Image (cartoon, rainbow, N blue to C red; front, side, top):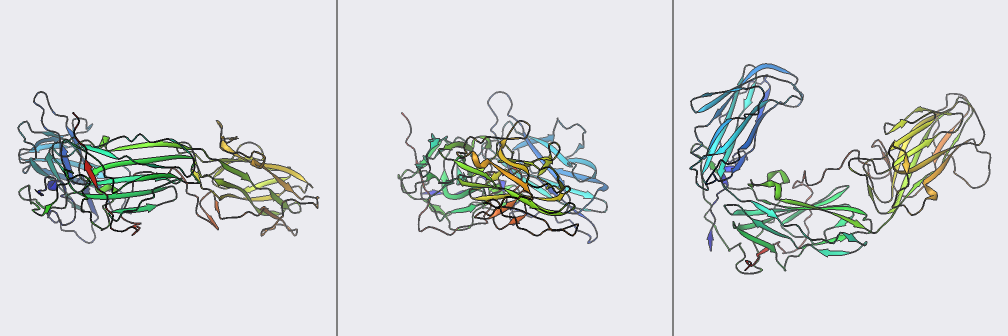
Length: 547
């Protein structure tokens, strides 16, 4: 049995209830500015020869929402009296305009004014002290004053040494078929100088991938473009040890019927420390509760895991080198997606205006995401002779006389409609005047090109017809005209099944088409908990040492 002693507790100073900072008396009429900085920082051990790499430490002044420019002077005081021999601190040498001067055991820094969008605060550089032993802790506290304003303080715990979790790169099969399932041989190591007191495992599977298992010590969140899982596993994950997923808690990744070009991200981080910090002395309290040997000396032994909402992604414990905590795999699934342009009919006498919706549909089965931050597809609209666009959607731009190029959002899901609402005016009543709607992949100049995944090219183009004379089958006009003359007019795409989205984010009977790039691994929160699963817990076993 091993006694649990918090070695990382000094890094949790900013969490609620962990430290008591001096209260700043606030006048109800004064703006309150917040000093924001990291709650904890790990420092590398001082090497036997040479100097350790310094660690950047930044504190930023944050104004409350709606606050304009503040012209007063801020005085920020960096209290270094409780470093406890762990480190030395100075203003960052790379700072263009020096703000700080030493004053005893403090740095006194002046900041003139604060304007929206302009970074303000102080940039520090922290270096491990030469004789600081592994585990030495200290505290930096920053307070602020300004005439006519209140500044709330910040504190950062420092620790020499700590865990350095390294996620192993999984050799995943990257060329898949819809429905194909593969196991996730997850492994990681602690290459640091101290154990991690619990870990946070994070998985993110893009929209076409599935995470079949559900565990009680994981929270799950599904958004428009991804499913994320955040799992906490308690125990001591020792330094210089490696771990692998135990056989009684497997993980798998499945390619869905809607999969095509997919991404899977996975990472491991130290869990945040729950113990309290005594801010006046820089010492930490110890949790003397007992736990089993989480290093896995008893193979396949389950680790206790709490059934509570998990810490969001931003609340990891500190890691000596966060750069090696994550990996991402790109997977290609043998699948197709059929984009279809819908025909549009306009009727009306000269001078009539009507709303006309240019529409496309992804018939699936796969969803589509654009390259980089680009759109999933572009649509070219060629208006017939005599028809003029009075109002053009925000997602469309002119591309020549009576030509427009419209861009979808970054993603178009399977069975999703995308609509571009125009307002059209019949300037000259020409019978059977014809234009075209084309959909495709973004070309070099924004023009639509053939989508390599689209198996049906015939429906990539549709007609825009003004005042048709044919009585045979064709697009049926409908809609609510807004005539500017006594004649009536109508414009609509042909009917289609399923919901739809307007390209500028408006709803049309279906899920909203999001605009811009979708963010991955970041912003995982405890919200969106799916309380699924029985008494299963994610567990790890220690990998046997190599000969």
